[in-house]
Every structure is written in C-alpha cells, then in structure tokens.
Length: 192
Image (tube, rainbow, N blue to C red; front, side, top):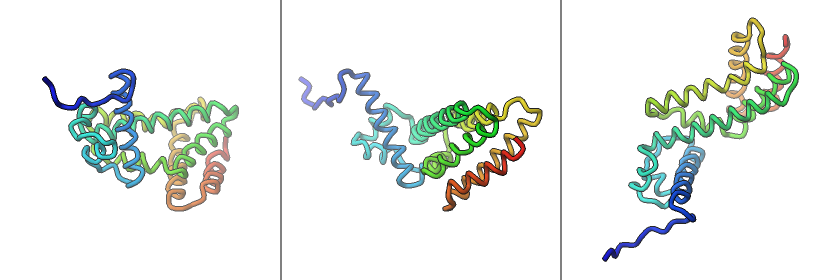
C-alpha cells in the first residue's frame, strides 16, 4: 500500500494543473525580476516563491535561465503587439512614427523596460538567446511599417531608434516621459 501523500491538483485536469503551475512559475520569475531589478536568481528562489520543491520546478524548466527566457519572450511579444497596434491605428507617417515612439517611451516610463533590460543581462541558452534577439530586433518592424517605402527608410528607422533609445535612457534617469516624447518626436518627424 502506498502511504505517501498524493499532491492535490488545483484544476479540473492534470494538464490544466500543469499549465497553472507553469504560469505561477512564470509570474514568480517576472515578479523576482521586477522587485530586485535583476534576473540573477536560482531555481530554489522561484520554487520558494511558488511553494514548490526545487525538483518540481525542473519538471517545467531546465534552468533559471530558461525561465528568464520565457519571461523575456513573453514581454517582447507583448511589447511588439503594442507597437504594431499603435502604428496601425494612425493614418499619417508622422502620426505612426510618433505612436511608435510613444509606446517605446511609455514602456520605459512604466518600468517594464527595466524588466527586459535586467533579464537581457542573463546568459541564456543559445537557442533561446537567438529567439530573444530576433524578437528584440522585431520591435523595429512596426517602425519600418510606419515609415513606409521611402528610399532612406532603413537609415531613418535607425536614426529614430537611436533617438528613441536616448529618450528612454533619459526617462529611466528621471526625465519626464511626456517632455522626452515631445522633444524626440519633434526631432524625428520634422521632415516626414
């Protein structure tokens, strides 16, 4: 006879319970990154946050870095969706570029960019690193859409990205996000 306690599941099915646990681990990792400003944490710390054993975490993730990669992928996908939606809602080149810049600067102002920045400092598994890199590079795609088919579109997108990054750094350093957006957008859209 088996006398050990059988773990209870918190969902109607085992599959749904696994998804709940995976989501709880994911949320715990995102919370740790946000609270500490660092993605350097152990599987044991995540397990403690969720109330699972360390070995239970390994049923879902091969390492803390793999879990951080999932957080990064999710965050970059959400950011990309916001950028695409903002650009798609506008009808002029100037308004589309400004919308793209607004989403980027607001992303920094509300603190989500610091999560991406902290998680980006982790040495990710090679396959995950390339996935994250591709998603990060994909953030500029809505900007290319915003600019359109100009002969200098590639160069213009790089300039706008650079100015936007400078504005993000200023916001993260304490600058007012509205002032930074207005200045950066005026600079970048003057000839559009």
